Each structure stands twice: as structure tokens, then as C-alpha cells.
Image 1 (cartoon, rainbow, N blue to C red):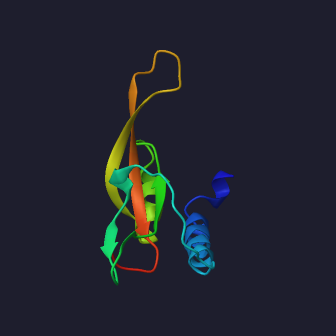
Image 2 (spheres, rainbow, N blue to C red):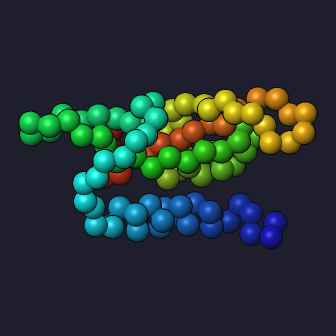
Length: 104
């Protein structure tokens, strides 16, 4: 597996996935979300949430974070969660967002 590292395959995959995601048909729906992950947009007589794709990494994974940055994601918050390993304390999970349809 390591022989494939650093060749751009992950970046190519993420970019292709985002392109496919953006090409999907959309329809409105109501969902419950964490308010910190939503960007509101004032439209014609209504306020809607901007569609955002989130990606969560671990703090010790800068290569994945770099891939996300190359593909248009921005780091915008860090979740603090209890680690899953025995004796592990709180773990920081950097979270990145990508605005579907381009600019914020």
C-alpha cells in the first residue's frame, strides 16, 4: 500500500467524489444539525442553510488535511471527544468544510 503514497491518488479521488456529489439532484428537506456546522443564506423571502460537506481528521494526520485543502476544504473547527482507546483522554478532531456550489 505504501508504494501508492504521495502519488496524488487520494487528492484525485476526493476531487472526483466532490464533482460527483455536486452533480447529484437536490430537493429540500428538514434535518436537525449542530448549529456550528451551518451557514445560513438569506434568499427570496426565506432563510436556508448552505449545503456544506464536512470531513473530520485526527490532529496527527496532516497529509489528509493537506489533501482536503487542495480540494477546496477549509479548516473551521475542532471537535473534542473522548478517545476510544483505554486510558485515552480527550482527542482533538480537526474538522474541515467544503461549500457545495463554490464560494461561501
